[in-house]
Image (cartoon, rainbow, N blue to C red):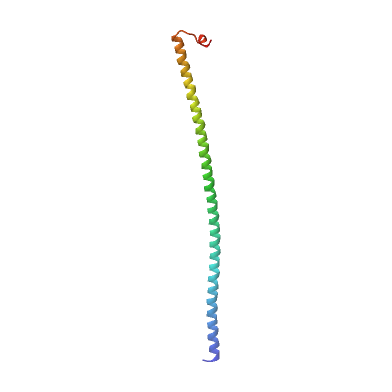
Length: 113
């Protein structure tokens, strides 16, 4: 093989290697871009996750507050019910007292004096 052919073959081989190198560089660049995109997506998902966790925590706190408020209202309701029951009992006792007074023909004014 003469020198001219050898130079031609070497140039051809060099061009092939440049093509491989360009392909490899393109793959590296593509991989780096994919990696950056994945990092951005991961950051976004972490943000969503943090937001979701904060919403869950807020909802749990609201639920606890509402349970406490409900318990307090039930307590008030129970107290009111007890007062109503007590007043009903007093009214019943007064009615019984009035009946007894009528049976005994005693006026309520006479009983008070």
